[in-house]
Amino acid sequence: ILLELPDDIKVEILAKIPTKFLYKIFRCVYKSWYRLISSSEFMNKTAIHHNPGIFIQSVRIFRSTTNTSFLQMDGLNFNLTNLGSSMGIIRSSCNSLVLVYEPISLGFDPLTKVYKVVHINNDGYGIEVFTIGSYKTWRKVPLPWPFFWRDPVSIKGQVFHWFVDSEKYIFSMDISNEKVSKTKLPYIGKTIMKEHYDLVAMDEKLAFVYKGSESKIDVWVLNDFGRQVWSMEHSIVANWEAEK
Image (cartoon, rainbow, N blue to C red; front, top):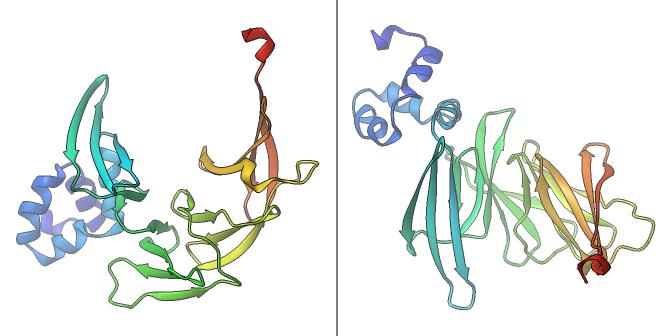
């Protein structure tokens, strides 16, 4: 009966089966089922039906060692599993997929429904992109000039933002068109000191966190990536006198 159902109905049914049983049993039955459970549509459905979890990782930079644990959440019940040190460093995540060890990032193209891996060359002169599930080679995306590698800030796995050695802009890449462009930093009324700011993801948007003084931190949010529109959402002031 399952063979006669439309693919979208099959996806809904198979997504409710625990993954460890699904891939062990169904991948050996029919090639069409294996292609179905390997598709990006099925992966998205599977993520919806499964309980959320968090990877917790401690990294010792100088010894190049890690220890990883996984916190599984089921309502008010929590289960912490120690995965040891064999997993490697978690570099990026997107739609429940986790990329480990190499200095690369994982993205998802919402237009073509495929996952892509993004890697910056060691010399900093270009970005390479690879589409998961394809037989094509890495595609090179040129940069106007080199910059030192940092893990990018990923916004839903669709847009990546990199810190560069500048007080005026950062590098950004849309995973769909694979083009790198400059994104202007917000106008804060004075010269930005690049060592005083950081980039983070907040509510699925890019946030610019600036430490203006020892007692003040401003948080700007990029509300419109296409038009590069920033707005200051938070201003945190520490009252040292009150604490004394």
